[in-house]
Amino acid sequence: MALMNGSLNLPSIYTHRQSTFSSAAPRTTSLRISAVQTDPKPPSSSVTTPATATKTVGVNVGKSKWSPESWKTKTALQQPKYPDLAELEAVLETIEAFPPIVFAGEARLLEERLGQAAMGEAFLLQGGDCAESFKEFNANNIRDTFRILLQMGAVLMFGGQVPVVKVGRMAGQFAKPRSDSFEERNGVKLPSYRGDNINGDAFDSKSRIPDPQRMIRAYCQSAATLNLLRAFATGGYAAMQRVTQWNLDFTEKSEQGDRQLDGAHVEFLRGVANPLGIKVSDKMDPKELAEVRAFFDVHEQEGSHPGGVHLEMTGQNVTECIGGSRTVTFDDLGSRYHTHCDPRLNASQSLELSFIIAERLRKRRIKSQQAFSI
Image (spheres, rainbow, N blue to C red):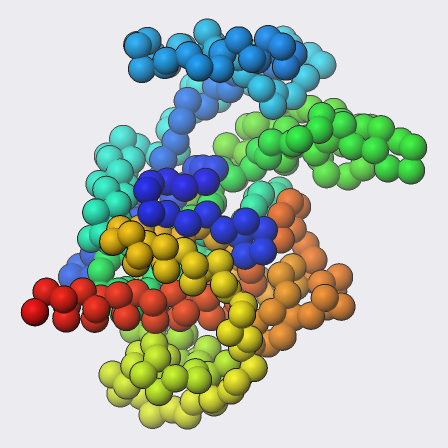
């Protein structure tokens, strides 16, 4: 989904909300953690027919006054059918009594940062898992995704010379809509998997029954995730010196290097005091990432701002998208294909992409400076 005009949502080739952490501007030394949150109580479990749903199309919602309960007057699609409505209501009442995971001040700060990106004064980097899971919940996975977002943010900030607003698809990215309410395998038909906060992904009748208790577990996991992210951000883990060293390590190990002597890799490393060697390779196919380049080309032609990118990615060394300098092939996909939903870029692919985007931001910045000086 695009958060603003000029934001790119890449589909599964690289590619709802919820989210997360927002960087401060380059002139500051601390990293703020913020997120956005909606009413924790979901719509009722009733499922409407397509004919009923059609009645709401074209309604001018701007004429009605919003309230925390106003969603109940609208048609709710993609809702699971809970077998025990009394248990569902009890769980919802429990969650309503919990403290908020995110506070209003954090949401306002993120809104301000997104406004800066929409005006071309910042750049949005949004990324994370397609769907968080209970099975893979651990500190290392959270740390690795946080780390790669920090690395990508540093590269993009250098290329664009603007603050990078980092928004993670974390701490609440569980539920997934489905085009079909049922899934069929070998003649067996079961309710579709809708995310760990609703039912399980195992293909058996017990796992696929919607369980409202999963929402409580999802809340606790979200709270713990955001708590750890705040600790990483304020405890020295996100220090720029550390992030820079990670990126230096990446360039030393990467076989991509850079084909252009005036490119982002070489320019980024030119200002680094640490002595190191850089491998230069022509393995990167220039036809790859055409969608990203087209995104920037369109904005350049229209004179508008490329406000940001939205990626499905992970800090783990998965093999879910082909390509990259470390050459994940079609035959490699089965070796570490762990996603619960759509495929994700791995850490190396994500960082490579950030260098490519940084180069486009750098060229755009130089072109704007030259036009301004005329």
